Image 1 (spheres, rainbow, N blue to C red):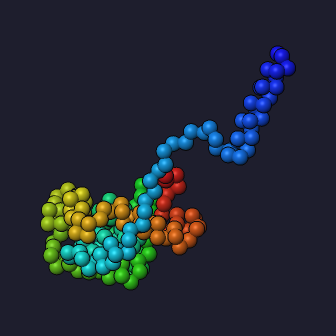
Image 2 (image 1 turned 60 degrees about the vertical axis):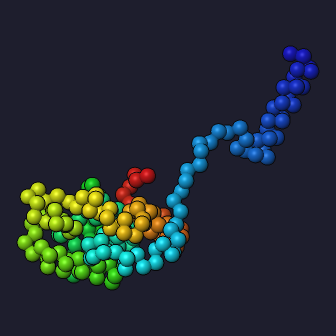
Image 3 (image 1 turned 135 degrees about the vertical axis):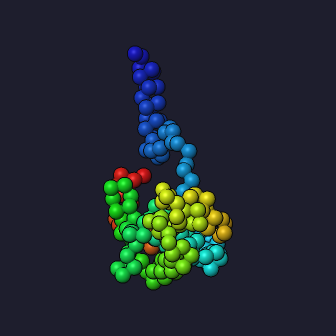
Length: 192
């Protein structure tokens, strides 16, 4: 190799390293940015429970908005998962059970729904917490349908996942402790 060629190779290498030193990401290809959930505006959240039709809708939306319980998890809740005396709800997530501690509002929402459920369907055979006219005496005891759940969220113009994400984001703004978030919301190990 000639001295001129060696000098050119050396200056090219120096040029590349100079660029890398000033911008270490130069030349790297990164995937397109991911759109992170954005918090809901306070005017969209103000009074959402008051805008809902009936205690079942208020309980369902309250569980998602206050405790970040996924709507599908709320649909699977059984009457035996609720302990009003200890103010808890046991949310089953596969082999894991996450215990949700109810505040005063949530306790009132559960009690209001249980009272309504007892009055409307005193002979209900479905063991799920949330039942409808179609499920309360169904022999297979199915959980509330997606349509039955969705109607509550349609009343406030929000999707369940929007409320869930807003609750988690709100708590994340309050604490930078990921362990607290995992414990509070019962996020099982290995979740994305």
